Amino acid sequence: MREKILISTGGGDAPGLNAVIFAVVKAATRKGWEVYGSRSGYSGLLDRDDLIRLTPESVEGILPIGGTILGSTNKGNPFAMPVENLAGEIQVVDVSEKIMASFKRMGFLCHIAVGGDGSLEIAHRFAQLGMPVIGVPKTIDNDLEVTDRTFGFDTAVSTATDAIDKLHSTAKSHDRVMVVEVMGRDSGWIALYSGVSGGADVILVPEIPFSLDAVCEKIADNELHGKHYSIVVVAEGATAENGEVITKGKGELGREEAVLGGIGEWVANEIRERLGKDTRSLVLGHLQRGGSPTTFDRLLALRFGAAAVRMAEAEIFDHMVAWTPPHMISVPIADAICRRKKIDLSSDKVLTAREIGICLGDTQE
Ligand code: F6P
Image 1 (tube, rainbow, N blue to C red):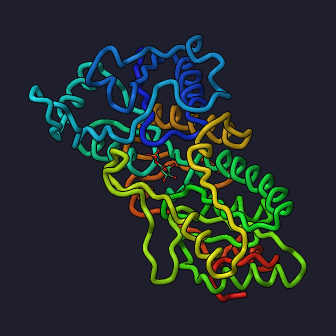
Image 2 (image 1 turned 135 degrees about the vertical axis):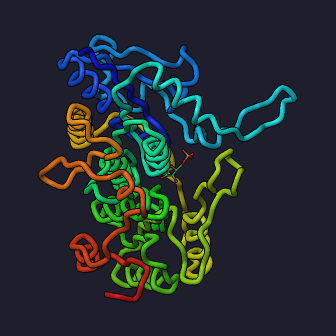
């Protein structure tokens, strides 16, 4: 039978989304299946104009391109969708039944939902309503449980490392402290990987509430040893001991959850005040989400896509494809979204950081 499958991309974009779409279309077409893409998350199931047929010809050339040809949104939760009524007021409505009806009417074998924890949670809710769903783990934050990696992370780390590399020369020319804020939500994966690889002096991650005394001691110690510049990498979700997470304010950016940001500038101001050192801060922001995926991310995304089609054929639903090296496995979506994956503080990467003299904001040597 000529099966039809649906694919969507949800949440914040990540380099490698197009590579997943590419692999799904290629692998499914070779089985004689038809593939449809839903624009902006679930829009394709609400509006026929947002449902597009994907063929090997239409995905030709997209593999190395960042972003997603389907578009993405982190404001499109079908269980609580903000919709403007006739009076111009915003009302929150549940359109999940409409989506289920449309999905059934179209006769799809399954829905491959590519997303992070928010999108996968929505996919899991649809699975509970009877939609055969397969999840593919995406996020630059690498904070999804059960899979060793999410695609997008390696590219984000590579962008951040490149930026840190460049900061060394300007920091050195001016004898400055440069504080760079990187993304990652409540996990410090991007900060740790890019900070260690980029030769940072200090790395602050949400997993270790930091002491400003420890940070300033490290910078002062650099001075003492004739190194008059320092590089501090701060994860956006890092907090000072007894401090609070700094955000841009709930609702300010039109998001349900508060968007993190501002800790880098705060740390820079504190360092300037305490040490009297010329200090500058910068926020890498969405640069980390853009651009062409690295080879690692492309390969991972392609493998995720192909494995998702394999799962569709085996009818393994309400599961997510996960990478536990060297294997691609399937795990219940519920296990992937139950909590956010944090850095293991006893891991070799953390140990390495400490052993090469990087200050992690605590007093441990
Ligand atoms: O989850 C990916 C991510 O880039 C986080 O690292 C960051 O906190 C958030 O999304 C930013 O969201 P937005 O694109 O809505 O600003």
